[in-house]
Length: 329
Length: 292
Image (cartoon, rainbow over all chains, first blue to last red; front, side):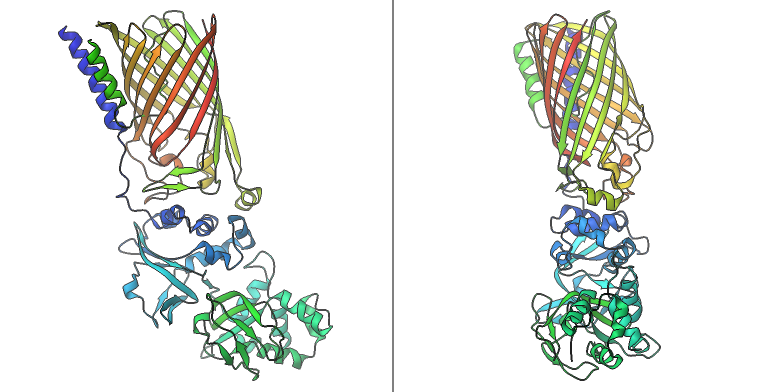
């Protein structure tokens, strides 16, 4: 009987072991990484997809080797932020070249923990990509470049996350080289700003918009290729390919282009006030109200205002806003 | 064993949350020269993943993953106290990502192949008559090894890997008390030693059921606890899924009904109760059992 009891105890012991090993663990005290937050949070589906496509998901799962605390700070654009660029699903990211997407993601990242207490209007913060981002105050809101900071100090195992309402873009080169990069399909997989590049070359304005020591910085409204095609229809001069720009008088092209450049040091959307503003061409542009991070721009000769389709692109000598209509003086 | 002791055992079984993907080892021996062959079809799917600290909605890239497998399972009594068990599954893992996304990322939407061959020796050295039933002890030793060179190191594509391509050496110790009337309860614990950077694991399972002449039914809970490993997207994760810590508690039921002499059908279902770095899958199977 004793032997039997001993075995029965062994049986119970086995049950106890299985029960013990089967007990549910509590994972709530495990801090997610930045990548983990992006994947777990339902507002960051596009950021998750971008991090996967851009190859930074594993980087943001780990400690930062270039920071003593192993931290990164990420300004994380929401799904709505991506939607403002027409990027609604993971598939839509395929319109972007992968190296550009990776650079864009790295522009949202910096070394160390940059907590909200250290963020103030007027300060700037270097990105992992290289170019600085600058903090701007408008009303009661704080912006990083053109992106409103929606939430701050989300703590991660490898750093800090702040939530923003627009994707930040930086080219790392000057205005002319940025436009050329777009026209060479180094940003989108299809060329963009090709007509603008041709126009700038034709009007011999490339030198003025190229960065050199001591050169000024600008705010530039850059019309899309479609905007130039529509202008051609308006003028009755078919603009089917970029070279067709040269069918227009050089002085006209020059005047139109100068109507798109403001010598104000380069301003992001929250720094642009509504009302008239003077471009290099001398005839005032009329800026619309700043609503949900965007505003319209109307040239003196326009019936309808232009919309910004890609706002706040940081270059080394100014800020470019891509617009859907050519601004006529 | 008094009835009260048996129910005490049952209560222990029914207590908290428990155990694992179904163990290949149960508390029944075949008898010398006897055995059975089971061909089964299993299907499970998940669109949520147990990550830490929280479960996520939507499998990265693939959104939803469906696993289908056809398994050949055979067991044979080398003697009254020694069985040999073989299991070989062919697995298809399919994701729900769009063709556009798959093309963009250069991913495949489906992976399939022969997975891992399991060979177990199951030894029953001791049976004790206790009350109106029998207390039985079983030890088992098994080798599980991949039969095909299926890829496992393809970043997120490996969410659809059909296994972790480790060879593992598994040991189990099992105790079962079966009443003469057919009710039984069993508990087992095991250790799985694995190569190829796949963390070793502690396995356990408890089961209660009824084994009678006209049918068999059981309910089980089983768990795996990896002894090391990283979390998916956790610190130290390098995109190599086999080295992740995989913990889970799974529960399920099995039914078997003999249809004619030497022939029966089986069916079952199981689901995850909790987990870590594993899809929250629910699955169903059906099989044909040939006994000899």
